[in-house]
Structure formats: C-alpha cells, structure tokens
Length: 505
Image (cartoon, rainbow, N blue to C red; front, top):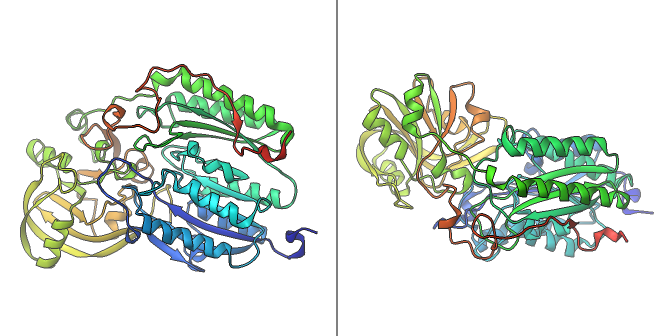
C-alpha cells in the first residue's frame, strides 16, 4: 500500500522562491530584498494570488491535500542573489521537507535565479530536494517562461510547465495546471515523460506571445497537444538574455502522459526547435524613441523604459525619460520611479514637508547622468504594495525604503532598492495619484501592459541601460557557442528531461 493510500489526504509540500537575475549588473540581491511569508502565512497570504503558488494552493484545496508550507519569497529582478540569502531560502524549503513524510512537492519558481556561486539556483534546490525525498516522491513546478530551463533544473522534476503568455497573464493558470497534473500522478492516472530541445540562441526582444514568431509557435504547440491524446503539455522557455551559464538558450519542453507517448513528445519538441532556429533572425524588434512616441499622441501614456527595466534585472536608476520630458515637453506632468539610496536617505533625513535640493539618478550604473531637482518631500517610509494587474494579481510586493518627491511637474518615487513598477499599486499604495499625470514611466517592458491599459496607452520605448538587447557587449562566456554571437550549425535533437527517462526503455 502506498504512502498516499495510508493517509486520508496527501501531504504536499508547497512554496515559492521568485527572483530573476541579471548577471551583469553590479548589484547583488540580499535577503532583505525579498518579501517573505513563512509557515501558515504561505497559504493564507497567497491563496487568492494570481501566481503559480496561488494556482497550486487553490487546486490543492479542491483536491483535499494536506498542504505543508515552506516559504514564499519574492524579490524584484536584479543582481545575483547573495550566497547567504540563498542559503536561508534553501534551508526553509529543506527544513519543511524534513518535517515529516511527504507524498509530493509542488513549487512556484521563476527559473532564472543565479547566486554569487550558482548559475542555476533552481537546479541546485531541486537536486537537493530530490536527494532528500528520494526518487518516488513526485515533484512538480511552475515557471516563468524566461526561466533558464537548460541549466539542469528540469532533471529533477516529474513535471514542469511555464507561462504561455508574455506579457504574463497566466501565472495562476500555470499553477493550476501543474497542480492538476500532480493530482493525477498521485491518483496513478499519469506518469509524465518529458522531452526537451535546447536551441542555442538568444532572442532580440521580439518575444511577446501575442504576435510574431512566438504567436505561431504557441498556437502550433497548443493545437498539437490538443490533437494528440498521448501528449500532456508543451512549454517554450525564452531564457532571460542577461545571464551567462551552461545551457543558456531557448528550451522547448514537451511532456507525454506516459512512456508510450515519448516519441510523440520528442517529435513535437524537435519540430518546435527547428521552427525556432529557422526563425532566429525574426526575433528582433525595433522600438520607437521617446520623441516619436510623444509626437504622435496627446493622450495619457505609460512608457516602458526598456533599457532600464527592473523587471529584466536593471537597477532602475536612470531618469533619461524624465529629463527629456522636462527639457522638451512642457507642460507635461510625469510620474516616475528611480533607484537612488542616497536620495532616499537625504529625503528621510529632511522629513515630510521639507524643501530639498538634490541630485538624483545615475547612482548605480552611472550610464545616465543625475538630474538636479528642488522639491517637497511628500512622504517617506518602508513600504509594500498589493499587485492589482493580471500579472501576480493579489501578491504583496516589496518596495522597501522610499521617498516621494514633488518637484514642479515631476513626481518621483525614489527607492533604496530596485522597484518592480509594472503595476499601478506601487504608486497608488504610497498615495501617488495618477489621474493628474500625463506620462507615467515604468521600469518594465511587457507586463505593465496588463495593469495600466485602463489608465492610458502603453508603449515600450528605446532607452539606454543594462537591459538593451545587445549580447555583444555583455561578455557571455559559458553559454557559447550561441547565436547571434557565433556562427554555428544546429540540428534539433530531443533528449529526456530526466536522464533516466523515468524508466522508459
């Protein structure tokens, strides 16, 4: 009799570790950069969140699982996580796994966490979990589609699935998907077998799923899975292009329901890999400039500061857009975030209501010179916000130490740490109204479109910074050979996600 049968409810370990690395920023991500829930709060605070964890929890509730919480930790994309911070997060998950016998593990992971010592923290975490619980405890996870799936993290999972959308509107659905597969594994109805193809290339930014080459690929994958009863799921991992490591590239992953569907899964993975490689030159975009965008519109507008995207790991310290608006576009009123620890400290020291003159911006990269402003400190503090948009709706996101400065027609949300500003909650929950603004700047390239669309037109613009798509300047080494850096011949060949192929002959 199985462990599941002996207990009335399967004991399922749940947790979340979510951060995306930029391997070439001078910043590091410490433990205090994470918004963290522990113990029962992992469940209560995330049950309604539109995240992978939320989807797992809601499905587990319906299935009647005995949920065993570990940790739920979320940080803004940024520099490599410090080794000390990762050790703390890892221990929380492993300690929960040691707390008693488990029937399964279901996790919400980004898939692209790098630490000071590791090129894939998720691969390390899942390897350690597998060593702890043994080969017979099913492990599943849901990922951001920008995960580093070629770095070994799939080797230890019975099933994995990534978002199907960019901008990411299906995080909760992804959690529900992996949890429903796990439920069927526990009931003995499925024994998934995964096949993968690593395509050695980086995209050039044209990787939204609602248009272009990825729309065609996702449509084909969805139709093939729906038409073939032996197939379970197909994911297309478009790796974050700002990391280095063995296996960095595009990863196609297709799961069959059992060993009998392995050939079909491999054939679809190989076909999608060939399509992606053939289309490699089309994965490039041309973004409008700030001047082009403002010249053609007179309505309220939300500008994605593409070169300084915190959601891709940049520090968010550039005021390029604000400076251009002030210099050339009077009387437009602008709201913008900026990372500047010294400016936060100065405003905090001066206090609410004080008049201050400060130089702000360019504090970390120095790529964009600072801006001198005189204004009034509207508020200071240490904050969080509740995500309102479709991407991770309902999740509590960390702001950290901040100051709000009103300087003429500019309202700045100045933060000590890089801020995920893809959602209006980061402004609204600090009392920054948006209705009187003409321009809102966000440090996001895609996901802000899901949250700000009701407020104004959403446009990504070409700006300078660490998240410009130019792999030739990054210094990639471990990932090579890699298109477009190298001339290489590629032929797609599918291999099992788990080297043992789950016992398939």
